[in-house]
Image (cartoon, rainbow, N blue to C red; front, side):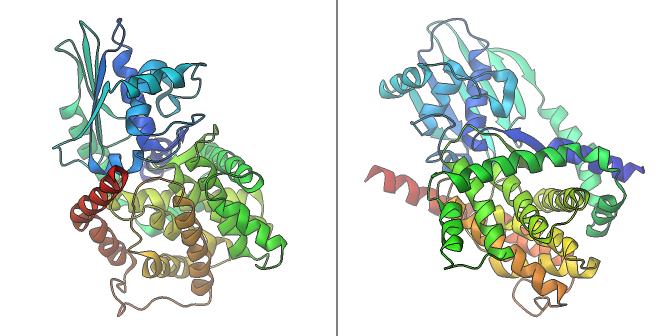
Length: 431
């Protein structure tokens, strides 16, 4: 296998991560757990300093296995009961009584939350205080990337320079040479036994989606779609199946179910939305397991590639990236050629671009449903040779130019939109 293929294998290993709960609040809990692990005395207070993007995604979403929600609560819970060795599964084995202890800390107003001055979109700084001690932990750029640990004024870890050089020397190198065609060729060439992680992503994400279909969580988007198919108000077709199956996983996850998912590029919802529309179509077409795994691999890698330009957190909904990636993989399942697969991405971007991210919450399941349906529709159009024309809006004749325009909207347009949305969300909560 050539060097580029080996790098793509490493990208999958890096970006497909098992996560229990929404990744922003879980990253806060992880940082708090790491900080507390360096202290011996009882907690007296916790300072939480985070970016606006992290704040909006952590404010209202369910916490796995808990009735309580909120940034202050999850920080306290992570410090009290989190297992720092589990990273994004930090709250997997919370002992009985920990929820009440964390709630008491919040009630006593021992947790202070503020916005960082750092320009980074993903920034979490936790300071856990005791009577005689203080531990400070900073997470930047990636949900598990601890860049600094400081205990009682002594620096235990500071990898700012190391992180910079690692990114320049490795990640940027591969992203500069990755192309749509090279990703597709990897999907065709890679030995199936090297795709066990992708297979695991299908199994994990399918389990939570089936749970969401069969039980009542959140807005019950997937369950209600399924029920209306059974009532024959909706057709039992590939679009309805993809929308119901995929959104059901988001329903369950946003409600705080104790089931893990395989995230993609730091997002569990995007991990679900990258895998499950493809799996839904594969089920309807009754393709082989190998074909399904290769198609899901294609979707995962395309999402990682696009997200490298789009960014991990944005004012635009990241599930739009997942939908575009899934559309190409669905076109692959439908027997489309390389051009038609690229058409599918163009079609999806021409459809769902502009969907705003107003934080992680139950309503995310509706956005997941919309993007899943758009992915199938875009693939069907593409396999018929139809593509949104380069004369339309942000769409260009070339795929990469279209993706660049899409990502520019998310990056250059994010700051003001994030400020406005966060202001609306915070003011709504204080009225």
